[in-house]
Length: 139
Image (cartoon, rainbow, N blue to C red; front, side, top):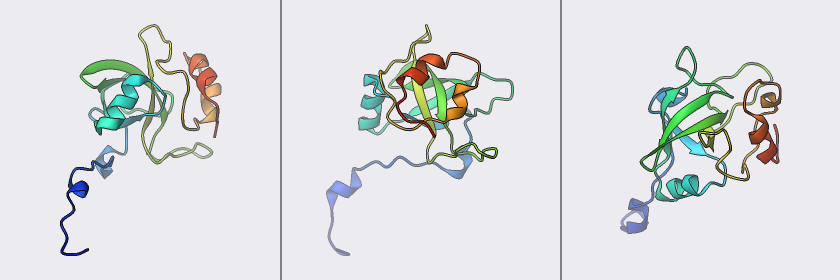
């Protein structure tokens, strides 16, 4: 296969992260893990959501923070439910930066969450009760 030209391999896009984007800052690539139509379309096109703003004081997002993302030319709010960066003890570290899209009213856009989410979200104060109701697996 060394000398063969395979056109299918040229057009496949891979979702990758660079070492600089291991923390959630502006322009970090994020993966939508709920079953919303908008998230699925972006994933099929190979254009992941990108972080525009992190709603906290230091501008670096962790699990449970609210972020503003750009996805398919739209601005949406989302909650971080999994991050690649180094975590405290007993907090899981994920392979990708996962988000759950929410509407402006706080309702989740999707009806199910496809990946396990950390159980430490149960103890946090905020608008997590609706997201936790959509989740089926916890880590």
